Length: 118
Image (cartoon, rainbow, N blue to C red):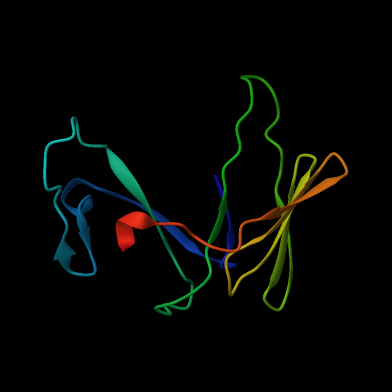
């Protein structure tokens, strides 16, 4: 995993008594879902603002292969991430964008269908 935004983000592992605590409150699981994880990753803005744009890139490869390095280009709210042979473009202020792979560009959806939020 690589965090590309916000630049200079603080990354830390929360474990033990901090595992289910955040911002002075506890968020213990409502039900038993099996063994608890050993830790969780907490990523925060470097300047402590309450709202920011976060971008994490997860890559996978076969054992022994080099992990593709993701690069970021940002101009205002326009963001482009290149990883492997793919380039993903989006506007940080709204849903949607495009992905370009092998010379083909596909438009990403401009809406989130979340019936569980209705």
